[in-house]
Amino acid sequence: MKCKNCAEVIAYESKFCNFCGAKVELPVPPPLTLNDSPKELVLLQREKMPKRQLILVYAILLIVALSVLISLGKYFLNPYFEYSEAASLMKNEKYTEASQAFLSLGSFKDSERMAIKTQYLQGKYLLDKGRYQDAIALLVEMEDYEDSINLITKANYQLGKDHMLAKRYPEAISAFSLTTNYEDSDALLIEVSYLEGKRQYNKYNTIESKMYFNKAKNHKDANEYLRKISTLEKFWGQWESTPRKDRLIFKDLNIGFVYSSGWSNIATVNIEGDDLSFLNTTYSISQETSKMTARTGDSVIEYTKTKENAELPKEEVVIEKPFPAIGMTKQEVKNSKWGTPKDINKTITKYGTNEQWVYSLSEYIYFEDGIVTAIQQ
Image (cartoon, rainbow, N blue to C red; front, side, top):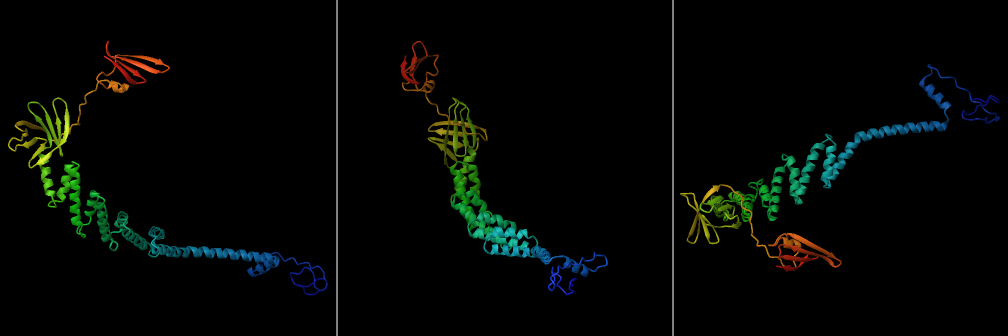
């Protein structure tokens, strides 16, 4: 561009001529037309735009381009980073987090297989730590994976031993029942069944004890217990004597007495061969007549079974009511032989409350502040 004053060439960006100092008037570019090429448009735009603004535009374009590249990079590379992180978690025995991480990756690479492997390793880890129930819960979901079935069997075996040691015999039986032919589990199953049978027998739950002793036949004295239970079963039910209508009720190891007078009692019987006994009385059942006899010395009473199943009576104890006595409370007097009075005379003074309970013309009880102080007969 030339100076209009001295015709010397000056720089495009200069506002004053370097030779004559005249102010330079920038030429107005012609308006753009559809015939201008893209290159001409860019050059023209550069001529119109100050240098700083041009740099700012380039910077913005660069930032936008980098953002797009980073977004695309994250989209394509992020699964690789997450997969690597999941593998690191698995290596550091953080199996729960690792399994969740692999599952979140879906079908990326072998994430689904790695999620199963992580769960398997977690099951083995829990088994080694003695958390057998938790290990079983994980491993049963992948019975077909490697040696999961064997690990489940081992976990049930160890769980059964733990239950047995803690005397949780039914739980031990359930665990050992799932470990057939594993080490000594069959022998332990028989032993724990026998122990639970004895426990139920001693609690008078003979029906339950019979079930467990049947699982432990020929083990120790299990058959002897079964023989005793068989004897008891013949007597179970309600028996009634003909002349007096007294009733005897047998259930488990108990005998219940229900007398015609209304008094009842419960006791524990002894087993003597095919008979039962209590104190000096022996109870026998005749195979020919199906009658039961109760023999006490030379006395014999015959009973007939009236019910196969009957509930034992509630034990009743007859308590003789006492006579009123000095020092009793009002409620204790009401529970005595005199019971509730016919009339009550009350006197209230500054020293307290006095009462006279009237039972008859000659029977009185006197209270001071609710306590018997005198009795008149």
